[in-house]
Structure formats: structure tokens, C-alpha cells
Amino acid sequence: MKLRVIVAYLVALWVANAYAAPADDIKALLTKGGAKAAYELGKSHPDQLGNPAFDFYFGVAAIDSGHAGEGVLALERYIVNHPRNREAQLELARGYFVLGDYIRAREEFSAVLKTSPPRDVAANIERYLDAIRSRESVYRTTAGAFLEYGIGYDSNINGGVSNANINLPGLGVLTIGQAGVKTSASFMQLTGGANISHPVAPGVALFAGINGDFKTHGSHREFDQNSFGVTGGVSYLKEQNLFRASLAYSMLNVDYGRFRDVASVSGEWIHQMDELQSVSGAVQYAKLNYAGGNDVRDSDLKGVSVGYRRNFVAPWQPLFSISANYAKEDNERNRDDLARDIYGLRAVLAASPAPKWAVSVGMTYQQSNYDARDFLFADTRRDRYYGVDAVASYAITREFSVRGEAVLSRNSSNIDLYDYKRGMVAIKLRYDFK
Image 1: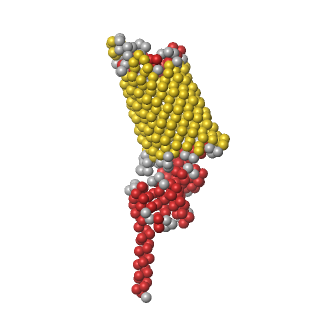
Image 2: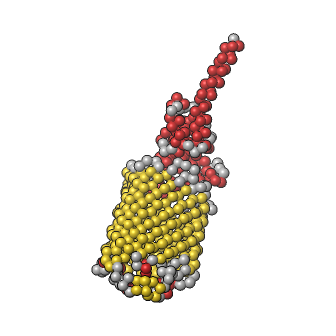
């Protein structure tokens, strides 16, 4: 009799260990950042589905590896048995978010927020809630506004040449006036904007926005700028595709006088390939009108662009995006030397090293090939623009944030008059009205 009891105990212990082992192995892989391997391991043990410990870790692994549907099902089974587990509730909320079920995601996130979680956890939840709010515009009216103040330093506010003595095609060595020579200055910038989106039918929403920007320099006030813009249009969401058509108008003032107006119409398409990837395309037509003696630069611009965006399941939640564009600028004043073909490429890598932090690094390349010999010089202009930018922001509160920016750029041209280098650094405070 005693032997039977011992055998029964050993069998029960073996069964318990057998059920625990896959869950422990998946947990270990998740701890090391191996979500994909953890998911694949879980898939090889279908007999474990329904085991609470297994469901929890498999659910997390599935969401982190791009299989949110399976992850949500596993976590829902777990919560039936452990309804007070806040960690599981957070993971389930994240799964709903990835699947686009924003109503249920908001409910789960808000429920956890009411339990007064640690500050870092609360900050992360607030970021998800803000993202949900921006995406809810497809089925409920949403509105927002912001105000931003910044100070900084610009090494070349006028895009001027480094040396006043330059060699120009057909003219030889000439001395450029002070207005065309590199000028540095500190600056103050005030920016604000507001937007609204209102659904009018399933998947269809009207949107509108307004923005303004004022920038003044500590010296050389003749280079002060202010701009104003409005936009409006309609968006249509159908399954994994978002279509958006918009009209926009903006005006730019330099030295407190009108410099340029831009009126444009554009169309955009975004396709969500899966839970981690999307592709996009856009077309645009714009009419550029310049004031005063600059009206010889009036032009029509037609452009197209394509893009790719990818989230990675890894620490810091990295996000990579790349886009390419082409535009043709046709001069309306029979000045083919001011008409050009524009080719552009931009790549950005962004990450969130901590719940309140966001960082990004970007690279930009633009090539401009002009149609005819420069009006003043015996050569056809060819420009190559290179830029590197970095941004780091910290959320002090849900509404109030601080951001640091830095940009280094170089415009290389075969005509020395248009060749310049520029550097800019700034720190900005922003308040979002939510």
C-alpha cells in the first residue's frame, strides 16, 4: 500500500514538472529577449494550451513575435483563472491594441491605471492611451491642440557661403556681399496647432487642422520668419487600408513680409501588411507663388513618394522607416534654369529606451538637377543635400514634455554660390491639450 502511494506521488510530481517545464522554458527565452524562439517553442507544445502558466508566457511571446491573435486568446484563458493579475491584464491590453481593438484595449489599460501602478508603468499606459486616442478618429470625434516654445542656435540662418570670395562659372573669382555669407545667430521659436477629426460614415471621417510658427533671431532680424497653414480632407479606412485625400494652404513670411504661398492637393494610401509592417504611397500637386521680385520663381510641383515602416519586437521597441520621393518642379515664368527634378531619400530609426523617453536618428538625401544653364552663370546647377538629425524627448507629464534637437546638413553644389554647411541645436517645451 505504501509503495502505491509513493508511485502515485512520483507520477503526479512528474506530470506537474512536465507541464511546468515548457512554461519555464518559454519564460527563460522571453527574459533573454527571444520572443520568436519562445513562440515557436510554445507552438510545439499544443497539449499545454489551457495550462495557466503556459498560457501566460505563450500569450506574451505570441504578441511580442507578431502573432497577437493567438496571444490574446491565450491571455484571455489565463485571466479567467487569475482575474486580478495586473501584469496579465496589461499584456492583454497590449494585445488588443496591436489587433486594433481600441475599445477593449482602453478598458483594460484604464482598469490597470486605476490601481495606481508604479510611475514607469503608468507612464507607459498613458502613451498607449494617447496612441489609442489618435487612432479612434475613425469612429468617434477627436480633437487636439498643442503649444510649443523653443530656443536654439543656428550656425547658418541664411544658407550662406563660408567664404565671401568664391569662384563662379564664367565670372571667375568674385566677392559676395554680407547678405550671402554664412551668418550665425541664436533664435526663439513659438509654434502652435490644432486638429479635429469627425466620422461621417463607417470608416469615413472628415479632418481639418491649423498651425502657426513664429521664429525670431537674436541678431539679423531680417531673417526672421513666420508661417501659417491650414489643411482639410477626408479619410477612408477599409480593413488593412487607409486612404486619405487632403487640400492644404500655407504662407511664409520673411522679415515680416510675404515671401511665398503654397496651395496643394494630395492623396495618400497606407497598407498594414501585418501587425509589425506597413507600406505607403502618396501623390501631390502644389502651386508655389512668390512675392515681389521673387515671382520669377513661381512654379508647379508634382510629386510621388513611397514608404516602408517596420516595428521590431525587441528591447527599446525600435521602429524603422524609410521613404523615397520624386518631384518635378516646372517654372511658370519661362525660367528653365529654375525648373528641376528632385530625388529624395529619408531613413529614420526611433526607439523608446524607457517609458517616458523617446529618441530618434534620421538621415536625409536630396538631389536637385536643374533643367537649363543658370541665368547668371555658364553652368547648369546640380545640388546634393545631405542631412543628419537627432531628437530626444522626455515626458514630464502626460501633457507636458521637453525635447532636444540637433541637425547637421550640407548642400553641395557645382556652383559655389549655392554650396553651404549648416548646424542647428534647440531645446523645446511642449504642452499638448488632450
